[in-house]
Length: 272
Image (cartoon, rainbow, N blue to C red):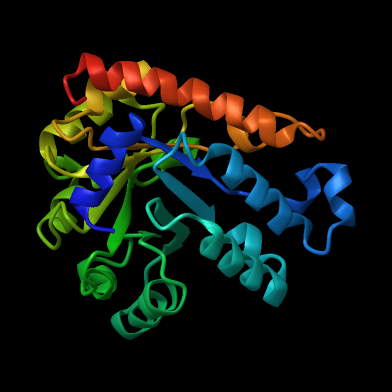
């Protein structure tokens, strides 16, 4: 999916919601455990319930890799079930020496056909360059995450910049805003505002709204640009809104609540 298509979907649906399919077999409603593939059945129901309210799905690959070969197949089957007009993210946090990253890129872009993959920048520019060779595919680089451990490295002062600022500067010089996004946690809205000044045109994938306590209003205030420029990820607050037979209905209700708030913000900022 290219940038224009993503922006058009945001305007059409009046939403910039990304639903995280971080599906844990231990949290799937009990009545689904009798299904041949409980995780896939759960994912399909969540997708059916939320697809009208979101513009993206983020599949956290760890939850599928943990189940071995069956998990990889479930991930592919889930990806295949997502409507083609919805932006897909492989939350895999890959990044290695060039030839290894080339294999990762082939796996997620050629064989699995994700639109994007999250990337760990620690090994530098050359370690991620293979991901930016694909047309209409995106790399989403970790910049400033919402976990407490972000203080260990990401927020450390390196010369005139903090490390996350150096990461953003380095990779913005490598790839355009049509193929690169950055991950910025919702729990750090002031820093998000500074990052927006640094990369005014780039999309930001923002976790931390919902179960982690980030504010959607604050994120929009500090991070929105003329095209919206935000994908707000919510996982647990939506997919685990209920653990009963009404889980899909409750997920839809939570997704709609967020989408309705997003529509108001998009209107207030003159995007729709």
